Image 1 (cartoon, helix red, strand yellow):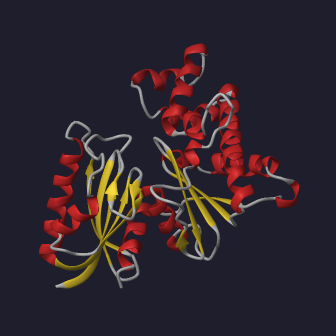
Image 2 (cartoon, rainbow, N blue to C red):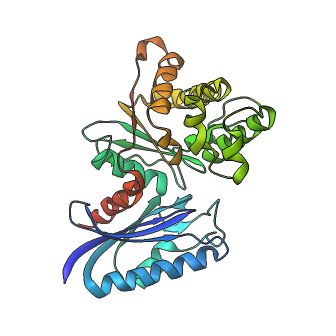
Length: 307
């Protein structure tokens, strides 16, 4: 049988179990939707079944995992998931090792894991330090220095989403995460019924940001101003990263990064104004290259640490 490594992404919306070679290249994939109603137990059943299929066809050497929430790296236990019930203080490393017949298992949170994937095989190749920020339903971050993840004290670190933007307690996540942006767009439409966003946002709630750029292209100046505001707030949050760690590259990932160049360019421009003059023009701001492969590729790199 072929010798492979396994990379697992455990997120709030999707689950991926991939196999890869000794260069962390994905060769096969099992992808599932996370069923919130079934909770952590349902996700574990999906993972267990996928592992059985993988091991029936391959000789698995080790497993790496990117988990969507804080974890204790020393014990391999999850602290919690902010999106799916059933992960509070769960012994994920031991459980996975048991499921896979005693194989070594390496676990990190999904933002760190994606940061590792992007730094080694994506938009941060050849650069150091690399800071990755995922702009999804929440906001997370990871720092990679000379190709290795930076780890602070347990249980977690580089929680960029919880950086405060005001003394009142607003955070980068409460203002600029996917759900926060969707909420802001819906509130904007309620006050501006002539906006091109009115019709597409009336169909269902969720994913409002997908229609944002089209409204701007159709001349919605309010939508354009909101994009400028979001870019400015993201840049302000990231300015703390620059002042503390001065990375060479900042990579924007997650669902909101699908806005593409308008988001990237807006953040880079605003960041240059938000940092001290001696650091200007600041880090290169880039869009993630690996898309939904960032976490599983990073997980494969975690698995490879067993060799």
